[in-house]
Image (cartoon, rainbow over all chains, first blue to last red; front, side, top):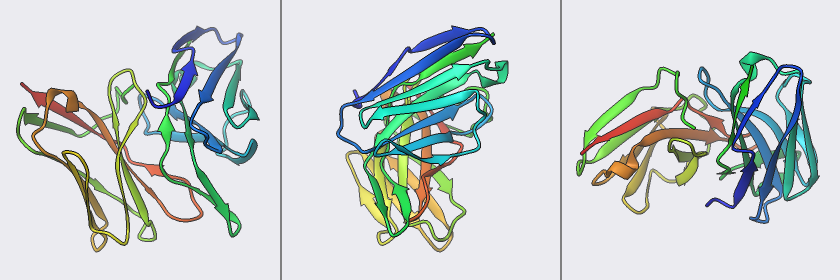
Length: 119
Length: 111
């Protein structure tokens, strides 16, 4: 148990559906992340939130919409996804050092992921 | 949860032997390195980390070696066990950036 909980574990959705992934961390960290892990690429950073504000968005399509209502919860809202979006979506949290104009992360704690299949 | 489908390098070892997993990094400015283990159906789990002011760090049954001259990182697992079978990722970071992950190596332990 890493202290980062993701639900659901598995999700099958059609291209016209709207669904949300949920992540909750019990570690007292101030940064949370969404990563995508697909069959053809290494781990890809999607979004970073620090103190509930988005600090990084790596050119992710707008059909993925993150939400961070507080430092313990993170959502990824999905709509009109494509089959190529099928992947394992991992949430992570970490202490985040913000200073001197930059943010840097180190040890990430990952959840078990949501295995998403888009039909 | 592992990157099935990726052409991952695979290391096959006999139970009880030592394993060495290697990683080359590209950014000479990277000053922090970390190893993760990902078992099937799970997210990556932290194993050990090291900063660039060190060249070796030991944990329980694991040792990380850092060679900054050739930008090489290795993870050594002593007395490998079946439970060590997983995909292992290295990641690097330098101040002002986020962790950058490598593609991973699959470790298979033969009983």
